[in-house]
Each structure stands twice: as structure tokens, then as C-alpha cells.
Image 1 (cartoon, rainbow, N blue to C red):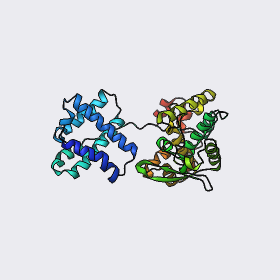
Image 2 (cartoon, rainbow, N blue to C red):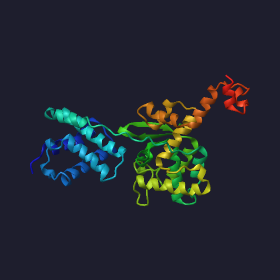
Image 3 (cartoon, rainbow, N blue to C red):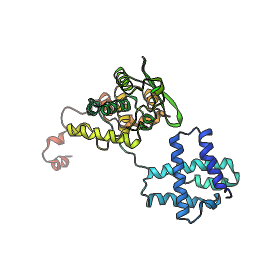
Image 4 (spheres, helix red, strand yellow):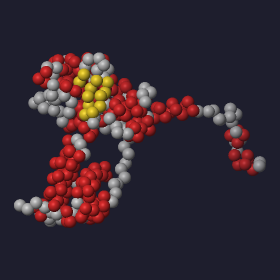
Length: 337
């Protein structure tokens, strides 16, 4: 079968450029791959173009906008999902305009497609009391309960993303003082996050019980299922929701609706902020590229806003009420002028 220019460039983009030049993470590569699988399905099913005959000149700006409309109307995707698909397409066309000058104009037209505005969701996080209640729910008389407690407490204490937790191995832990955890974040960027003594003790017991402190287990998944495989996103989300529901039955005021894995990360960030930790340090712990991303927690913290207002408050209200408040008949008072 003859190789088309599209298959040549998309293969090089996914298999070489993203890995070797961009240093993209496995998650990013998988997301971009899924976007182009969807695009190819759309072109084949809706545009009636056979994939083996697909060339770059057949994928125009109109094709891309029709694809984006299709995933929203027929697949019921949100604006944020549409934007993530468009980001993958933009990345490919930025690569393509450097690789093939003959397509420069069409690349620029595709790159001109705008992202849609997305609704900013409020941050869902738990109070300190809510975290305590959540961590009291696993049954520590059972092995699985002890694993779940170690998992939930590490998710909160490290502020790690769920995929970062999934990818952890015992070799990423340094449990001697000062204890740290090595987390590989977005773009394969590594950060070291300090751990407190209580967290370290919990992990030491967990490692010993599961023989993860042995040399042969260094690269095993730190948290695994009954088949000794890495926990999945849905698996961890199930664990979080299960204990959140149990906690809600005890005190629903402490557990917000819609709690997710990310809620534990949000909770850690908010608690650090409320404790007076500098935003720069919080940025480093969370693995944000810019402190501007971290500032969402400062904007979301109503308690800090209220305290800041109280500190800046100056009493400008006179002790005596205005004369018109003393007058039972406002109209009479106004006519007196």
C-alpha cells in the first residue's frame, strides 16, 4: 500500500516528535492519539474518505471545524473536551508547518480555530475535619482497608495527581529522615515532596506488609489490585467515592458533593494556603508550571478573603443613625428640605 503524506506525518508526529523533541508524557501521547483516532473515524464515516487514501490536502479548516462540531453534537462532549481535542490538532499543525512549508497556509488556517470559553468550576475541597473523617473510614483490620488508608493519606499528604499516584513505585519513596517522595508529573518533570512522620510510618508498615521493601520489588506498582496490577483511575475514584459516601452518612456537612480524586489534591493546597505557606512553595509541591495556576486557591479561599477584609476594615459608620432613619415618615423628611 502506498504511503500517503498524512500517514507519514502523523506517524512521525506521534512516534517521534512528541517523544524525542517535546518530551511529552505517556498520558499526553495517549490523549493526542485518541484525538486522531476520533478524527479518522469522522473522516471515514462522515466524509466518506478511505483512510488509506487520506492526504493532507483533504483535511481543511472546514473539516476540522466540522469534526469539532460533531464531537459536541453527536458525542455530547463539553467545551473543555472539545478544547483538549483542538489542542492536540493545533500541536500537530504547529509541527507540520515546520516540516512541510507547502502546507504553511493551510496550517495557519487550522491554527486560527479558536478555543471555546469554558465555565470555571468551583474548587471542591474538604476541611481538615473532613479529611480526618474520610481517613477514619477504611477498615484497618483488613489488608485492603490498610492499603486504602495508605493510598488516601498519601494522595492528600503529597497533593499528587491521580496518575502520579498510579505511576508510583517503592523506589520513589525515601523513608529515612528527611522523608521525601519522588513524583513524576506532567511532561515527565520530577519533583520531590517532603512527607511528615505520620505518613512515613504508615507507608513503612504498608511496604513491610506487602513485601514492597524488598529489593526485588523496587519497581513494582506501589498501589495495586488483587491481580498485582497498577490501580486504574476508575479504581482509585471508586475507592475515594466509597469512603466519601460512608463519611457522609456520619456527617454530610463535612463532605462536599461531587468529591473526586482531585478533591484531595485541592484540599492539601487549600490547607497549605490557610496555614500561611507561600504560594511559590505550594506551586512546587503541586508541580504547577506557573504560580498563576496556584493562585486559583487564593481566589477560592473565602475564609482568607474574609480575614483579609477584617484586617483592612476601618469603621466608617457613625455611631448615631442618620436623621432620616429616625423619621417615621420619609416623605415628610424629604419635603423639609
